[in-house]
Length: 162
Ligand SMILES: [Zn+2]
Image (cartoon, rainbow, N blue to C red):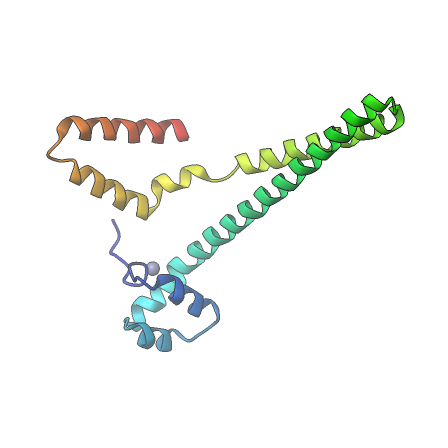
């Protein structure tokens, strides 16, 4: 494991990241949060970009989820209109509703495909996960059976996820 980053470990890491993003000089950030300048500098150059990337991905996934909800909603309406038009014998409207529903389905398929490309496996190599894993395995030391089961489950998840 690389040496720990005092900024990443800092309870106010998010505030520090936000401050750094605004372009605040690392000297003043170090002073404000009681950190060494070199640690803040290293964090800013080596860790901050990854944090920002993660935040952006999370935001994009949230937006895609929202879009997915809206299309599902539209699809519900289209199917409702189709049903009513069919009952009323209004074939022209029924046809329009079918066409609309088909467009929604295509969009749903595309969105679902994009969402499936989420980097779900990344968590298994993140420092946070490795650390948590070490804590869990360590805590289960006095319970070899449970420890073995957890380890097998973790390894299974890791292999299956890739
Ligand atoms: Zn850091």
